[in-house]
Image (cartoon, rainbow, N blue to C red):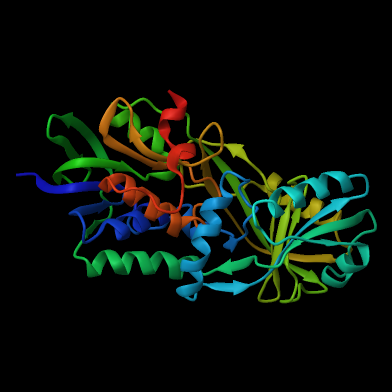
Length: 361
């Protein structure tokens, strides 16, 4: 006989785990993960920072609203974020800073001398910057484990190595078949499957939204001089790179976005080489060794905002997907919003309209 529950959540990465934690105790929930362990894909490969400008103005309310919970949990460490611009980009940087300052984000203008004090060896063409002093590193594993612990304490069942193979919509909800042979019945099916979100929708007979996975590459690099712990996260205004120090090494990305099928993403040598070349155009450091490299998939809806809400053509199917590269830093607020929508409550901090799947239909 199928195991019954109120809500079946597909995907136990940060999105699914945080939402299941918020729902636990208020509904019977089963958390279903295709991999052997939760967080294997995007959650376990995050560059791990909380920056209110990251993701754009449409994402900023979720990021800002998540800050207090992340601080209360002790999962943020001060870092600072510095967006830098070349000569000739001053007006664009001023507009960037003004846009976020108007949203209540603390942003400070830095001249060339202030840039040099924070980024030793900065090349001459980089003349101005915008500092977000409130940017922090996030303990991603700690946050994910916090949510999984809440799930366990509430008695919510976590099923791993349990890929969804069929989902049949019925008058009473869903009949679900898992790859390990188990069957479940659920009143509501939640799609928190990350890069596989559109695939899960098709399996359930729901129209996909065009959520596309994109590969993002990170390289851990040893440099001379070594990157100091006091250096902020450094981002390019034109979105061609970002880097930050980590235990004397540098985490470096070419800010690549290469469309990909959902998969176990692996770095491409050309992307690592691009990252190194771009770093050499920013600082005069010597690259001594690439010690490690990895890639993950960031999944975006067509308008690059997340999707939270019930599918119009099936009120028992709930989208919780399209978090792009900002799903970690927005997790607390997004989970509270998703739980409120699922349980019929009125969201008290974030207007859900901008994130509704109805905007695509």
